[in-house]
Length: 254
Image (cartoon, rainbow, N blue to C red; front, side, top):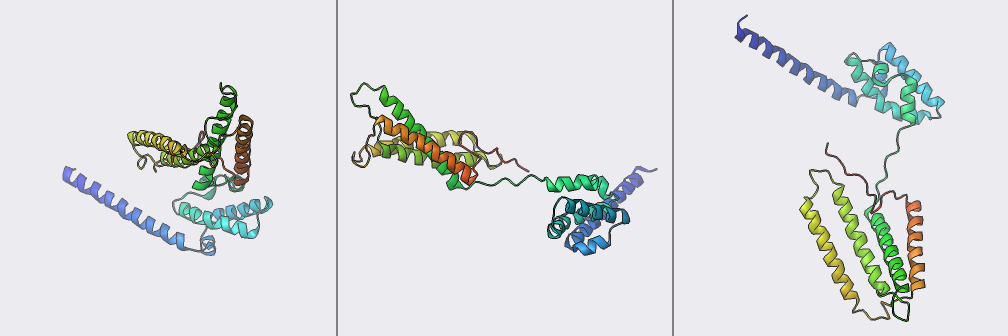
């Protein structure tokens, strides 16, 4: 066969495939707009029996009719599309009981923790660390009065700054790789954060001691324990799973 004829035939077959795929996509779009009743009426006997058995399994698992209808509305279009391609439902999902188990044991969607909750969590952690460290250090101070060197207002302000800044940094690190800042920018962010913290801390030293008192070591230790206790209760009540040391994993590019 002449090479030109062979190339022409190959091109024609390729065009037929493109047309077929285009028609298939158009039909898939039509299926997505069909009601559950319309799709059910067009199922093969084998697939209709599969749907019947699946509904029965979900009912036996304690699902209400309304909840079953909601699940079936998601599944029926997939069954119809696969049917048009020659794939029965039991090949697509496995047996009805297998699919029913997959539906009833779907993993719960991960709750997204709001920024303010993560910031509060981190801020309480830093406050607990700062107060406990200052309380412990004051016991080993040479001064006669066992007091911490840093005022309580200074520690609170630094905890707020660190809580907000590190939460934002964790959020940036969770972005898809294509949107994530370059490493040098993250390093610059960290350096800038430390500079801001030092400036803020220096400014608090000018605040009158009445507003920014240096507390005795026992008081600082109690405040540190209280900060961690409140943080523990908030994490349980608000169902916070992320933390400064255990941030959520990065989001991958799709």
